[in-house]
Length: 386
Ligand code: LMR
Image (cartoon, rainbow, N blue to C red; front, side):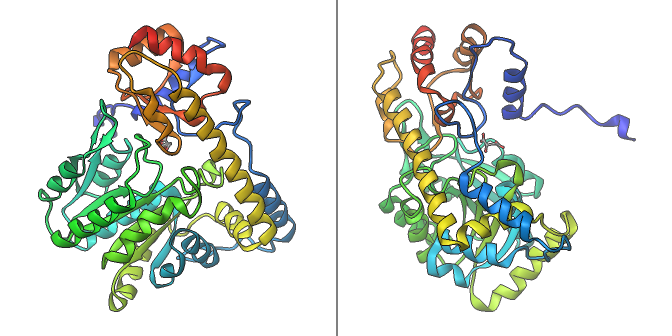
């Protein structure tokens, strides 16, 4: 039976990671995977995370299960950080990373009768697979003009008409992956109106809080949306904000009417139980420790400020360069780790093969992976292919 399985194509991002690892050139540049690197090219454990881990190691008395919903203090603190006071009314459950939270949310949408999830394109390359794994239709809607590097709100809202009431729409809260282009406050308000008029459910994906303009600034738009819609799902990842990628720390929050909350929670518990049963503890416990201790929290905010400052400086340095047809100056206005360059697959392949510079096939670069020392070589290579 198993011998009938057909070979699957490798995940496009994981494929690039593997190719980079196997490239023997010592001056190769990795702009593929979305991981922050400091000026020395390292991804260190944050100071507050190290301190929280030491506290946990000294104080932890048991390794018994945390419980079906996960760490409720973690959920409360992360909810408060992301949505402020309104989070008290949200149903929540810990998840295995932001990806796990997206999957839980898609499964919940499917349970509620949704047929499809709209994906403003280009989206994070894993979004369609998660939607389809939940047996929902993944429907791309036009959203961004790559050549001009601008959001096309009219096209996006026109795309909403292809969905039916109760369908979901994934909207990235900040630091868009792969575009770095975020909605303005005004655009979030317009989105809320358009979604409400069609009975569509926003599914907010928040994975880079603090990487754009600041911890509070980065969620202002999503909060404006959430204040205006009756129902919403929100997937939160703390992988990047706390630099704990491999710990798989995420959570799903659900906004719904008070009378519907117990049923929503019971569905989430049942979905999680049949999938991985109980969530892992360590990463969520670290986030809980950091957010609940004033000194650790201040240390974390300070280091997050340093990270954001480093990304912004890299963006400004790139934006100062002139490269033929690429509107480099717009890179400074974009937010977070990613930008997508107007390059075709042949140009991306030439950068990889001739210059040892790796990015996704769709020309997404991880700005946060670029060391200052590598910028001149990167720009020269761009000039050679573009
Ligand atoms: C990325 O987009 O590079 C990260 O979110 C890692 C991943 O799993 O895709």
